[in-house]
Figure 1 (cartoon, rainbow, N blue to C red):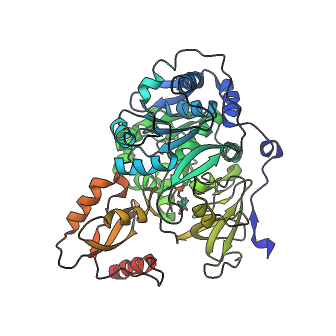
Figure 2: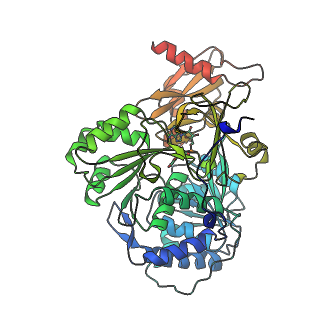
Length: 531
Ligand code: 4UV
């Protein structure tokens, strides 16, 4: 094998690699240092928590989990909530007692939540007010969920109450600490198991390579905390000591006002937010001069948009736009630009982060490719997930025997080892950075009595990235309109999965001899009909 065609990020410093700390011990040590500095500000009502508040709350919640709900080491606790300044305390509390957090998308419908509850079987569900009814409805028929507890009740008074004498439950750092959901390269959402060690290394490495971000910075926490990207922002804030402004949902005015009023200096974005910053007229009305860094990840960012944002917001002052590329299964990040403040190469998702190795393989024969040759991107390193929870079959289909994770993304690297993303071969659709699994929509649509066959793909869209779109074969002689199908889907799925790309009626779905949908053929059909 041509070893020079395997690219390595810088080594992870030994003291990090050899650390035996679990996340509870690690964060207790760091948070103590930041004490009374502000950690989290709620953009909606400007209430805030200091680092000490967060730690105290986490200790008090941990005790409630342990003594009132009987949560023990290795038990799974589900969190079903939109972004809140209480989120870090909840996650830390579970880690303090050696438990595992399963983070659920708060937009899930009862059916969707039931799917992930059946995978993870949490003993306790912690739900926000908004999600409480869905959490209760989904949990009721499932004997393993013993309690559903509203966040407000769990956290009542836990912030101000001092707690000084707390000993976290010993736990090995190879143990799973969080389960996130991803459909990976194919099929339905699966539970991605990440260990204390993977998250510890990811956060430490991100802190190390982003030394431009310091404790005097204010970060924008709009990215959902149930997603690994949002979890990473929480962990970065707790590691660096910087402040995070927390938004529950995207509201144009509130978002822009918060950037201005809270003097946000570091924005974590997804491409649709970049399109908003590049194009929306409201942006001109606000003073965004405090912004010094924008990180963008989770979906392809066009070079045009990147330049438009720099020209519009960066007028007359240095504004760095950096891109990161990764996957939930890789503890989020595998490459980023701007490492160590180094000049960013436009259009690139940057270089491998410390500890990560990468290679590009030929799509047809798996052969190793070289500089500027496009193929499937594969990554290996200590931040690769432990596996899909209780799903060894899917785990071995994405991680090969040598430990390489096959991403289902097509890309290449240049002679300076900057990586570029070209396309996606896996089924996954990304709507505004959110994962939409075609298989999930297809299995739902197949339950419709008037639908004979179906295929779902992502229709390219400049604002959202992709819009879920269905090709439908009707049952003979049945009447079915596009609107009937759209309404049927809307009733059953969370907002990001709606068929915003519309419906096309066809006579048959193209499939290969083994019955696999040929999505590429359908995508080409759309491309051609546009020409
Ligand atoms: O599993 P997931 O939902 O994971 C993510 C991870 C995003 C992040 C977040 C913060 C970072 O700093 C960072 O570097 C990456 O979205 O979806 C994984 C798939 O999303 C696409 C690609 O298809 C992945 O397999 N994707 C993620 N980042 C990019 C991207 C990107 N920069 N350009 C193109 N596609």
